[in-house]
Length: 80
Image 1 (cartoon, rainbow, N blue to C red):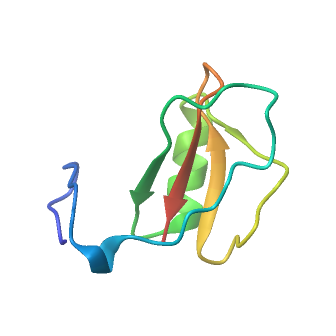
Image 2: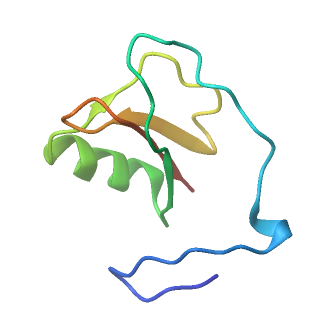
């Protein structure tokens, strides 16, 4: 679903869902996992890191999405 710059959108249509991908590690409990749609993966990744996120070592498909953690350790993905 297209959104204006700076807005957040949630879609419940079946076509927007992807198959379940289990988190590879149980070091930290996962409470919520966000996938954020971005126009430019590299720019969004750099902005997230400048804001305190850290990039995960495990990157299953870096051409399509990037896995990061917020400063509290919660995982999230940036999707291009």
